Image (cartoon, rainbow, N blue to C red; front, side, top):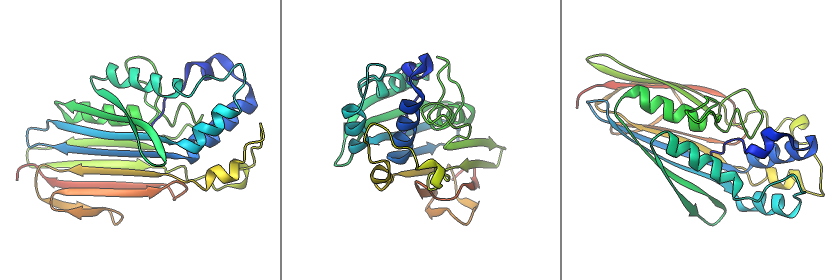
Length: 236
C-alpha cells in the first residue's frame, strides 16, 4: 500500500509510537500499480494502496493522545493524489482497506513523477513525501522508475525495495503497547507493478512476467531488492 507521512509524525510523536507505526505499516501493506502507455506516450496509471485491517485495528487499540485516528493515514495520501491531478476512492477487501487511485498522464515524465511520488520518496507539489521516505522513516523508496523514449522505442527502468530488511531481527524487535509485532509481520503484503507498453516487448529483466505487450512484477514484503526494466517498440 502507499501511505504518506501523517502530519502528526512530522510534529513529533514519541519514539516508541513512531517505531510501532513504522513496523506495522511497512509489514502489512499492499501496493499495486498498473500503467498503460500509448504510442503517443499518453496513458493512465491505476493504483491500489492498502493497509492490513489487523494493523489498523492494533494501531487504534494502542493509540495514545499523540496518535491520530486511522482515517488520518489516508487523508494525506488523498491530498497528495489530488495535487498530482489524480483521483482517490476508498476501497475495502477481505484483509485490507485503503485507496483506489487513478492518474492520467500526457508524457512519460508525468507518469514517472506520479509513480515515484506515491510509491517512492519524491516530494510532490504539496511538499509531502511518499510512503518509503515518509511513514516508514526509510530513505529508500519502495519503487523508483525512470521512463525514457526514442522515436522507435520506449523503456522503463526501475528499482524496487519490497522492505527487504523487514525480516532483520533488529527490524522486528519493537515491542510497545502490548502489540504483537511478530504477529503483524506474519500478515505480510505485496508490491506489484505492471506496464502495458505501446508496442511489442523487445527485452525485460529475468524477474518480469510478460503477456502480450504487458510486463509485470510481483514481490512479497521482505523479498530482496531488485532492479527491473522493460523495453518495447514505440508503435504496435
